[in-house]
Length: 281
Length: 278
Image (cartoon, rainbow over all chains, first blue to last red):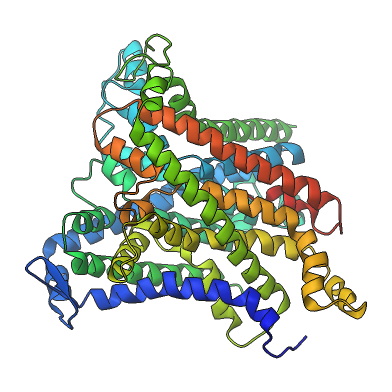
């Protein structure tokens, strides 16, 4: 169906291209230009100035924050994947078709509830006088300081990414050839060993992509680190919001943002090539 | 045999784990609902008395009404624009093969993978340099960018259930391309189009980060909630959360019903996808 360019074709293809080029691609490219601008007397001026880059990347605090954020998101990706896998596995292999459909539907619901409200709700659970401590007090335990800690932050990260990770894992588990599992069982492969040597390799792509999405989501999230993690020491995304909202230091915020994008691209590339490696062997 | 017993136990444990996972996911949602009716200012156990005092506080708060109005205006405009744009892109991907198509599709689907803080900063800087920031249409511009990929994905899934020769048959019977679009493609995609309208509206209703960056004084409701969150403890968040939850769920369930009902009837094809798409 080769066609020359027609008015009809352009009517449908152009709006998306124009809109995303003008309001998605252009802002991201503008961010690159902005990172070279200079700020004089609290005003931004177009410039080609490396100072923002040198200043930001020359700070020890920046690199501490960078490594901390990287470590937090990597841990979140590992923890979420580990916690989500039994859930996805259970839904994929242990539920009836109807129950599975319901489970998927329920998993989708969180995407349409306000993340902010859920984080506020977790504050109610985790605070010093909150629900969990009130329940623990009845058993004679606690109180534990769970709010404004890494634990609280991880709960927030889980709230953000757990349903998505389960869904992505689930979609790859559903496509695992069931005869492979039966074959493994017939060959006297143990239950757990079957999971790790048959099911996990067969669904590797989906599992890695799920972990990658968890990483991307948590890397850019400023709500959980701020309202459940306490925000001190900050993460990169908190640094961006602070720098942007507290005046005219947008060029420096742009430097942070671009460093984040570069990191995400590198991680995404590494994850995808890892996911598809060994497939040919 | 021993193996049989172990199997049952493992099954049971996994099912329990699935139930616990749902408990974790829905605990905050349920708590926000319960505490929206709690009289105490500082929410904890045991519960205070039943009260609608926070509902009254929200009802009488002009700022909330202003936010709600902004949210609704933005949501409606965004859903229409994003669906039109997304449908066009989906149809292009469905029908045409051209040089650079991979780039085209990547551009269409990429926005949700960029962290919202970065998108927010980029939009704010770009829009204010072109004097488009700080207005309600700034939020619309940004939300269309973020919502169009969802609309495209939904429409594309529906189109993939369609036999491409249907359109060609219409042409052979003398229909122009426009007529084929009007009488074949659009009717076939109607459930997906409506579902895209509702889903994109729901996404826009809940988006706070980019809206926070670009909205200036024209804050939408989620941005107000972010403001409440920055202030002291406020059970109003629970009330607004409950309200937004019900509104979003209504939209999502409507979308789901549309997809399920129609995708079963015409053209058969992959019925499963209709039930699964969010």
